[in-house]
Length: 336
Image (cartoon, rainbow, N blue to C red; front, side, top):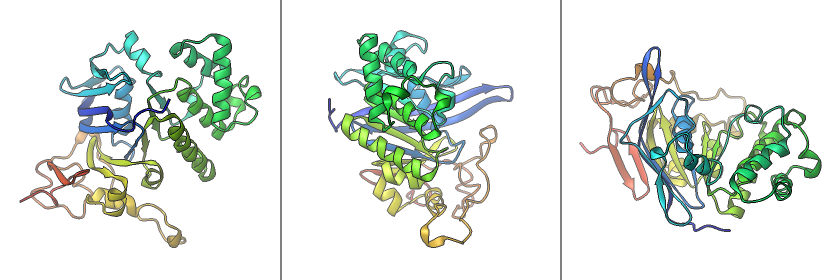
């Protein structure tokens, strides 16, 4: 069933997540806001350690047990019947969150070999998801599993369904992981760097596959990556994250064509281009700071060549509206 392509399916507000460690409380996500509409794709991009995966795992309550979520944070999911639920208010071990996770909201993980059990066939693992979230018998669940393997482009699905994960290539395992995620007909798919470990050809096939299935099923997608080049191919909106905060957010065309935050500009310059073959790649100088030693002020000022001394290193920039669908957190755009 094609779902409506308007209104917000998911809204994340003031999300703050810390982790209890031996060194103290580590702030991983610091006041993140984003939303995704029915049938649309939100791309979340940033370097490793920026808080992308932690933010999205909170949506399905899959962060580690030592995670601490601020009580003022909220994640509102709107079901197809119009009812709304704050995911963070649900018991993390209760039936409601288990029904939501894998049913209404599915997730594709970065490394399929660590997501599949090596002792069960691919078909058994797809069927398990179907039997948990759809009211069907084993025979129908197997038929759904075969159909999903065929839909994600795996040849000879009647044979592959009885094979184990180690018998499949990396690209086929990733396709099988997508089959598991989509077998429950979710409203929202979270894809956490699903193409990172794949070669360029397979990567392009997986991106086309996700886009095609999204159009066919009418689901929303949150696509997480560190590569703006990948995001530019799949997203409708982009949120750029750095050290647990969103630096810039807006429509894909505005972010790609007219980036307004120095970090977004540097990420775009770091993308390899055909006309730069043989030249050194442009790197962002420095490293992302440790969450244990967060810098005072704007988190990016330690690596920014446009910083304003005495300002950027003293306080956090507010959100500045650059248009109806474009915001940036940067003193270069803040009035006064």
